Length: 518
Image (cartoon, rainbow, N blue to C red; front, side):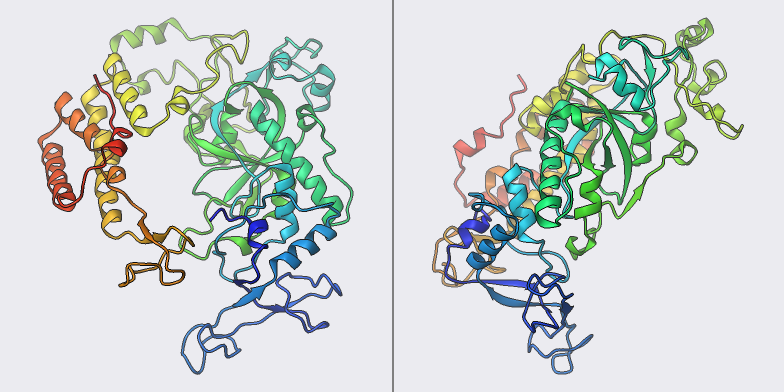
């Protein structure tokens, strides 16, 4: 249940669906690409998943596609002990998290040594074999070395030799223009990447027999190191460089860098990984064999960023140090932005004239990058219901926003869809055995687990289905919601009542989801 490989190794026998590879020299089954005994490259075998007949393509007997894996009995205790010896550890970590089943097409597992070394450094692995730190995007165009913990000597080594005015950089309080592929990452990110760097050094020295690369003992040792930024639902990572740290819970970077990840610059949640980790541990072989399985993975890397190739909307940034009086006069008139475009030059005007100048000016200076709120209140709110409540409360306070329009958008794009989706999930849910954790496709007629005889329990509950119902009702009553959404909510209530009329109400669970809008 805990997916703990160490705990699973204490069992007498474990049967796994795993890739079928054989060493041609030793003639022994070995799931690794290279045989650990003789060093030969193993050969992948395909066979029918039904009758076991070897071959490629369709099975002659069963007319089904052959696969590259078999269900094999594995002595996890022996495998674990061998992995401990290979990496030179005194003993195995107490817990090594695995998966309940491999999702890639060939059922190829990662070497256990990697999981063991990650467990020792307390870092987690993503589905593609890499280590990631998720961080909210924020744009930054200028910084002072003193703000981000960067010494003058280190700044010079990184190429920051002049400040914004072209004067020699001699003081940590001078203002510098941030290069387009440089990042100022959160201190928490630096601490996690420090653990990741130690894991990578362990991997290089103990598993691959190579020299350690990072040799980092503190976060500052990561300054100047290359990382990869990746956005969800994309497949191209963008290389960046760490130049400093912030106490804020955001990843500061040039708007061009965020745009290169196909993002709208501000407020999105992306990931940061060490470049060596991506080059060393990423493999398409680990990616799930399903629709969208290759998403959220650095299938390609963009090492150099060309501002002329990013989304044009990222160039709609003014590059002036002050706004003209005519601009303010137009604001009183409620003029359309296109009417003042000529008054405020943007970076778009630099395109196509050769030798583009990407300096971005600013109108209001700040004293300290960390002088303000360091973490978004959105992150601090514990539940989605709390977030919706505060969103509507904020909409009521802002003159430029209509609360009823916000309520309609939240209802139509989120809450009503969730109610319908959760109800569909409830009616088609699978049961789970409380003893062995198995989830049969259909409820056994005997009412107990067909594997161990354990008690069966539901996986979706009434409280989870109805958790947004009170919020939706409150929003419809509080705001002048269109009749269509009122009727749609009433129809959903009828369907919920019909579904749960024979079920008791779990009052304790219901309390967890009721939002107070008073």
